[in-house]
Image 1 (tube, rainbow, N blue to C red):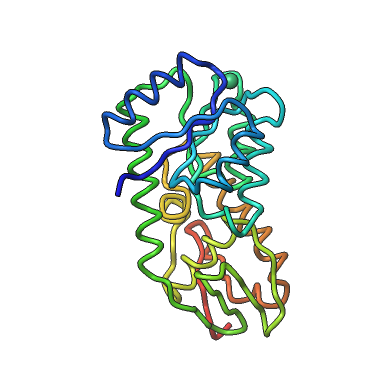
Image 2 (image 1 turned 90 degrees about the horizontal axis):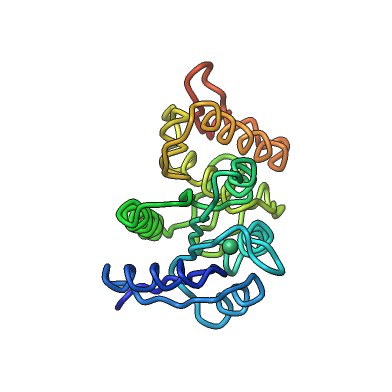
Length: 230
Ligand code: CA
């Protein structure tokens, strides 16, 4: 079955160009021109991936990202943001809200297609390990997207959830920030954004896990390790 990509963009020429080229790459496409349309379309059509322009009439792209990634029913749908050069700060906010990647305008179609395929592939890899993980005080259910600490439910963002899952699946092994960034976010960025993004998410994750945060051990100048005996 063809994978369906939802294009959220108000500039008609860009939409036409994307539709034409994504169809040529073997995808189905759906297009909406504003944030409200995007939320409706996600609810009713269940796309496999969303290309989300940030500058939209009405609800802007960041808000759309926040709503979709904050809802357990839609959090797993990958979002690639389309950003303009002048939106560097928004890009960082978008990634912290859980967007999976971004492509800066003007973008090359070849690069965009490669990013889309990479994000979809990562999504499939995640689906290959659906089992419940219970280590130390923490239980993660990837199918239900729930985390509990000694039976108490903890609300995590999509990225905090992924980060915890990756750490738990590799329990006992030290994972570098680069590895975590590549596995959970999967893209290359300037070094200061890399470190910051991983560390910020670890920090908020630990806060939410409270006492159970002892399982996430910092390995100085390298990365993090999940220790179920900690
Ligand atoms: Ca726009």
